[in-house]
Amino acid sequence: MMGCWILNESLSVILVLLWLGVNIYLFIDTFCWYEEEESFFYTRVILGSTLAWARASAVCLNFNCMLILLPISRNLISFIRGASICCRGPWRRQLDKNLKFHKLVAYGIAVNATIHIVAHLCNLERYRWGQSAEEEGLLAALSKLGDAANESYLNPVRTFHTNTTTELLTTIAGISGLLISLALILIMTSSTEFIRRTSYELFWYTHHASVIFFIGLAIHGAGRIVRGQTPESLVLHNVTVCRDRYAEWRTAALCPVPQFSGKEPSAWKWVLGPVVLYAWERIIRFWRFQQEVVITKAVSHPSGVLELRLRKQGFRMAPGQYVLLQCPAISPLQWHPFTLTSAPQEDFFSVHVRAAGDWTRALCRAFEAEGRAPTEPRSLPRLAVDGPFGGALTDVFHYPVSMCIAAGIGVTPFAALLKSLWYRCCESQPPLKLSKVYFYWICRDPRAFEWFADLLLSLEMRMSERGQTHLLSYHIFLTSWDEDQAFHIALHWDGNADVITGLQQKTSYGRPNWNNEFRQIAYRHPSDSVGVFFCGPKALSKTLQRMCRLYSSADPRGVHFYYSKESF
Image 1 (spheres, rainbow, N blue to C red):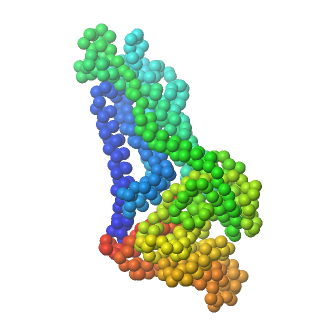
Image 2: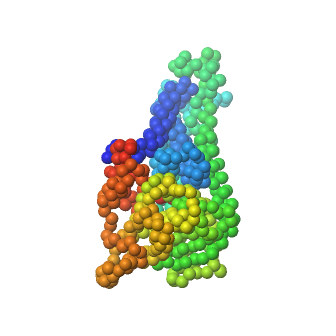
Image 3: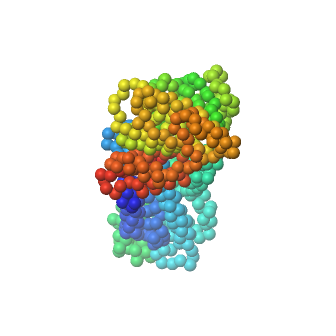
């Protein structure tokens, strides 16, 4: 099982180790430089090793802030996914883990920010104690520099009685550092799974505190609090010779008073490129916001599902892609992701929205989706569309065998795939690499099958007419029912069609036995690569990942299951 896990996840592990290795290298290299650099010798006399801790963590912080925006640059990822011929196989699957990498980098930022804050708080206290009347020797001499004319200071805290809190709030570094810290805390705490599930809107709004974070990061070093000896001063004032002759600095020509200057800020150099790239993403979104979207039909389905059929000039899509929707009448700022449920061959594109949160409930109300009757597009609210963007499901056709597994409303990403298969059965299309699709749908509410059953029924009939029933094998599971439903199911069990879906394939009751399902597919396809695509809850996702590892062969020539989860 470990060997199979390595075969499936080896590239992901290598990339994570590479990211971790760069962080460790940058930290150690910067730490050693500040511990040994001659220009910071006098700074180390006051601050000790906390100087190196602060600067090393700052470099790692800059590195991770440079990376944090790249995984959420949707147009960039879609371009790489669709245009790069080298982005195939294992490399292509890494693009599906962009949000995982985004979270990993965020943890790196949190760790390094904590080290940086603690180190500088220690530095502030050390600066203050350097002005103590009890201090003597080189430390006291360094802290008194700047009192006389034509001297540059090393210690920014000028008296022992200085209030460190006041000092913190009266400097650029202190104010920007406080804003950065508050923004980071707000972003991290509101990004927990609990907040995202219970109040997605809160998560969405607080995540935009990142604007404050990056502005603060760019100006944080402008105050140049950490100071070192200037290159010119190092030539005239040799530290090795003069460090023990501090009492003679103002009188001896051999050891003049050392001169200091702040280190040039560099954070903006790290983040400028990604920030410009992300700003360009927002410009593209604004441009798409201005484009007209025609709502051809709004249909209310059972279980609080709203179907929107839309048209937009120049819109081109592929099965498995998703779009971001905005309804200015509900919120002029919020954009929410929805998988496209139409096929590229249709003259419209569609999404299915379940009323699961504040925004989606407001959208259903705006389109009068409480009833069951279709809503015609007369005085409907305006919609804006950004996208489409590539998702994990765009890779379904790249495998000879694919398992498509959906739970509840998670079936929507697979609607476009099944419709695309339907059109390929109707039209003369080039031969597919994909030769078999196993489709699984697990749902609790029998009414939820109604809107999707029509698609499956037409697909079933079309494939039967074309003699291509071998291409699709579907399995529907109902996990919840009441006594009346159970009686009705038992009464019509011997019918030719399923009592719930109307399909020839009967609905199963209860949860799938994934061990049996994976074992059978591994037996039927002993030497194939099987793509496993899932959209649904995290608990089932973990189970499927474990099944992929368990039933993948350790032999490179055997069957291998490659797992991908739809995420936004």
